[in-house]
Image (tube, rainbow, N blue to C red; front, side, top):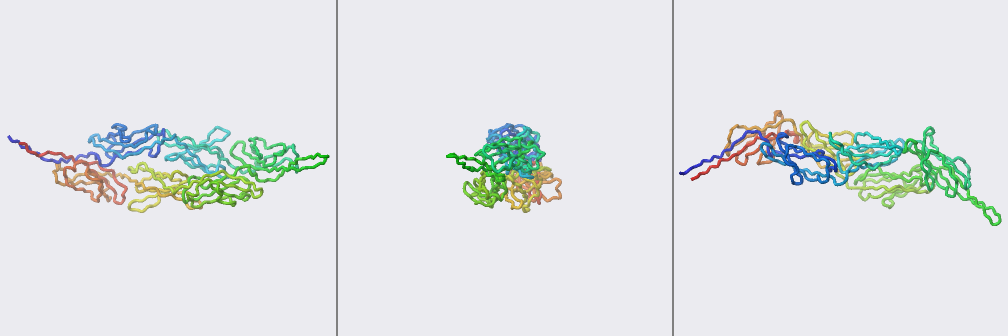
Length: 609
């Protein structure tokens, strides 16, 4: 008997809304987003499947190509108390609970610094506050982002620490003397703050307006060896204030005392400069100084008594206020004070002799022990810096009357190539009604203020208006292409700008919902028939849209037509979805629609004999 089997190929169209297995890649993000992280911090990985609800998927996380956590229902995975061993490349994958289709995210690199817990760095330009002035202190933690800063002050006379509340700023301006230090802290809401180690302390002193004068008790023109001299440290305008006094003589110094008088016995070694300094008894960092010059001369009185010569040493005390040649070292400062500087910037060196008036001295400047400016003014300016200007700088002063000289500390100047700003963003897609934060930075350096720019494919770039602050962070709710740059300087000088950052594209999800529908509701479709899908944007009937389509056999394709017609054949079974984008805005679109799925089955025709 011969049996014949007729097998018919049937294409069944299932008009069931399922989630697209590969409609859009999963997205893995970290909270916080900055890098590097440090030992002891925490990070949370968040896996967004971009399709369906959070509970429709099981999730797993991979590290360096291997499974890190098995599939489970948690979309988030937190690593607490990070260590360098947690550094690596992370990826998440999702498995749909009904269709069992899977998709994975791109790789995200996590870097946990192998160095110890970071230490904040406190920098200051001058450390002495002039009368009525202020100095600027800067706290930083490099290289990293997301820090807010806390400031502290104390004095040597008390262990009590004063916290300075300035809103977390890295730069503060102070008018009080004292010992300052800072720390950086960062973290997420509801979690303990991660703190750096404290910075090294910086001592700030303040010059008060009272003038200190050294006077002599007796006005004898000559004093003999062995006689006593009494000097008095007078603070003009401070008669009703309690003071402490410090005396310095040519080859030694004394400790601070409550006594404004100093009595000593005249000898051959008494010649030299005498200086006193006063400070408020309840403030170790407010002071003023004055000095008196004492000169000894040997006058020999010959009294001939046979072969005997009587030599009498006469001590002449000159009650003239001269400038103490070595009472205090000169100080070299730079404006601006930050480091490094960059090619094209300018810097001004100022030499402060700490004695007398500015015009009482001639000044010279050295770089790496080579003279760059002969004895002239106290200010030396370098315009349009180059890397050749890097080096160790020092200034020296020569007094025009006494010819005494003294030199300053050395100041290092580093000049680097022009920098490029760095723009970072956590997520680059703004959810409905949400915002994203962009961060601009120039590392390693300080003193920058940031400018932001935005454009689209249809409009030219324009500057985003921000406040008058540093503007390192901005929060945006508009889509577009963003760039930033850093600038510093100004106030009578041109602003020095970095190169622009690389652009970052921000997209926005609008609230309209896209839905895929099918033109005919046939339960079965045969090979060669046409299917028409329609992308409807709910609530957007009066808006002109461009439509994006995803299918198993093609990548995203954009069209002005909301209808998509294609011919059915076997490989074209699978998931289809769409989204709408406003025609006048390339960066505002709906979320991808839920999918309509075509399930293909076979019945094979063959004959058995």
